[in-house]
Image 1 (cartoon, helix red, strand yellow):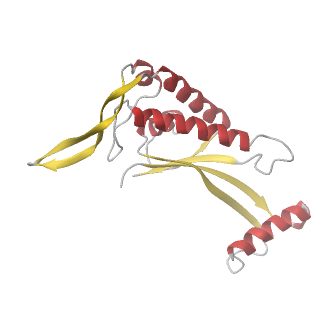
Image 2 (tube, rainbow, N blue to C red; image 1 turned 90 degrees about the vertical axis):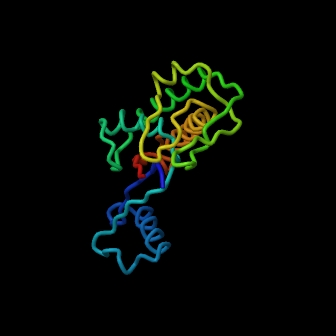
Image 3 (cartoon, helix red, strand yellow; image 1 turned 180 degrees about the vertical axis):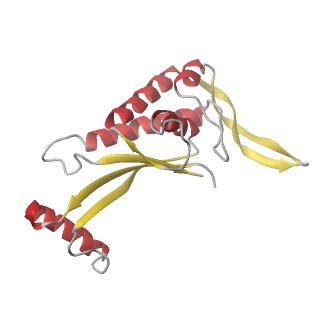
Length: 193
């Protein structure tokens, strides 16, 4: 239970003869590899192949960014197309925020526990941000049902840094060129809780 977030990379292909021998072979390899002969329509040899490219858990600031910048403010667990420019924008925003954060030793939230009829925070040693103005302006946290901590701390910074590294990896892997098998792949974001 809680906020799970997925960025999927997806490609479409077809195995019609007029697409050439390579495309027919790619289609056959996928169908045969998945053992999908019984369900694949032999008259319509096409596929959509999708993989999880990035995954976040309770990274509510990243989720809020997608809701605000990709989903037009609609937070409905739907699946939304994400363009390369949007990924670059998210990466650049994360970089700015990470560079602005000053982290110092402190107590961070590790969840809550029910005690004496009420909820009590569980605190542990970690890192807290002492200057959150850039983070609050560019990549604010967002609350929701089991969305995780809304604190600006080491966990927040770690999610952003991981996002920067993941997006850099994806943009490099999907650069456009005839030799690149991942050129032209599309990205889609969805979440659940």
